[in-house]
Every structure is written in C-alpha cells, then in structure tokens.
Length: 224
Image 1: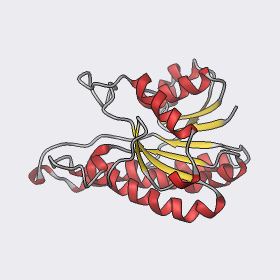
Image 2 (image 1 turned 60 degrees about the vertical axis):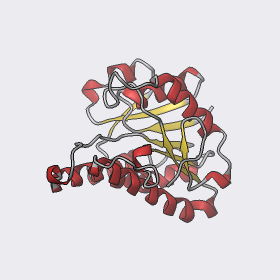
Image 3 (image 1 turned 30 degrees about the vertical axis):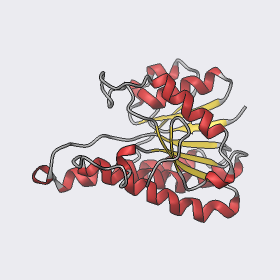
Image 4 (image 1 turned 180 degrees about the vertical axis):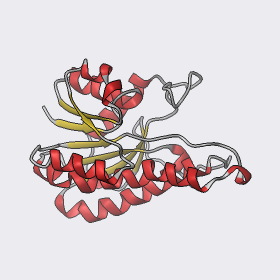
C-alpha cells in the first residue's frame, strides 16, 4: 500500500484516480479548490485538502500541513483548458491564468511537497499533460495558451527530472488522451476509467530511465 497525493481530485480524471487508488487499497490525499464541492471525493474515504495551485500562499500552506506526511507518489492533475481561436483572440490575462495553473502551479506543488516526497518510498512525480503540448505533433495550431502551458510543463519536468535524478526520483509527464470529462466533453472517445487505468499501470511500472520522458496513457512515448 502506498500514499498518493492527487491534485484537482474533485471531479474528472483526478476523482477517478482517487477512486481507483482507493479500490486497490492505497492511501489517497486529494486536493480540491472548493471543499464544499468535494462530496464525491469524501465518499471515497480519502483525506481532502484545500489547494488552489495558482495561489502560492495556498501551495505553501499545503506543504506546511503535510510536511511530516510521507508521500510516495504525487500526481499533479489540476489543470484548466484555454480559449481556442487565433492570434486576434489572444489575451494576456488568459495566457497568465492558464500558465499559472498548468505550468507554474505544478512546480510550486513539487517544491512545497518535496520534504514529504523525500520521506516517501516511491519518489514518483507524474504531471498530467496533453498531446497538445507536443510541438512535434502540432499540425493545427490555435489554443495558444493551453498548448504553450502544457509544452512549458513538459520542459519544466525535464529539468526537474535532471535535478532530482540523483535522489532516485522518477518524474514524468503523462497524456491521458481525449477523455469524456467536463473539460474533454461528451464527444471524447476515451472513457475516464480506461484512461486512468492505463495511467496507473504506466506509473506503477516506471523505471529510473523513464524519468524526464513524455508518455501516452497506453504506454507509448510521445514526441516533444
């Protein structure tokens, strides 16, 4: 049995992570922005913590509360979508908002939880990214803020993997696929339980040489 911390665990992919982890007997700490809306998460008998990943004070407070709690695996799942459209629709505020949640927030969470992660046995950090963050795969453009924020997350993780590699940490970015959630929409081809099942199987089997790499939910390595 291991201890996992899952950010953005109140719904969608994060909630499904918590559900599947609890079903197999793992301990889960799930974070939510609004605890009043965490009923489905509380029903899973997990520890619920308040966290706004785009608020440095909130991140620091979480780190202080969990400083003595060993965490084996961190799943940085909290994220937001972004407006589509072209250059004419691009707004500075939108870029800043999406980067704050999707790229800066996950790094601050790692920084704040590093003592707890060092105390854990797993030393695994998985960031939920997107194929839309792949520069090599971008053949349609648009979604400037979302694409760029996920590409930034991928690069930040690469540096993180290099820095923490000597401490036996394995740090990866994982693409869940186009999943039927509030963000993915009803037209998405992949069920959330299937996506998370694949992501967990992948993260469970991560070897040290996987650190710093970019994987799909089915285990295939993706282009940067």
